[in-house]
Each structure stands twice: as structure tokens, then as C-alpha cells.
Image (cartoon, rainbow, N blue to C red; front, side, top):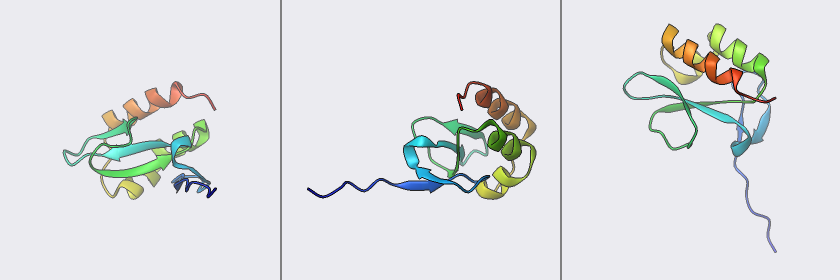
Length: 90
């Protein structure tokens, strides 16, 4: 039997390729709000991050996430993403 195709994505910080389901999607909605997309189906520009706290820290503090999303990540958005990263288990 033929193997099923598993979609892969890359973390925008460490550039590690992994199956899409193993990464966390962050989306910049058309309204300009940056949020974690737990369903993977929110409308807007998306970027993927792995479960490493170092990647989340660099994405939020540096400009990598804003560059990948092609938009502005506000201080409120950064605070919300930092809160979410605290819940991750590496």
C-alpha cells in the first residue's frame, strides 16, 4: 500500500522541517491581530513555530515573526504569544 503524504512546514526561527501537526501556527488575521491558531484554519497570513522555548523567545523579541507574517506584531500580541509559550512542553 502507498504511504500517505505528510505535509511539512519549517519553523520560522530555527528553520527545522517537521510535520505540520508538530508545529504551532501563528496567524496575522485580516483585522491585524496576531494570535495562535490552534485549529490551523484561521484566515490570514500564517507562520509556524516549533515547541522550543528558545524559538518562541527569538520570534517574539526579534523581528522574525513580524517578517514572516509580513505585518506588525503589537506589544499586546507579543504578550499574548509569550503567555502561550509558557504553556508549551518542549
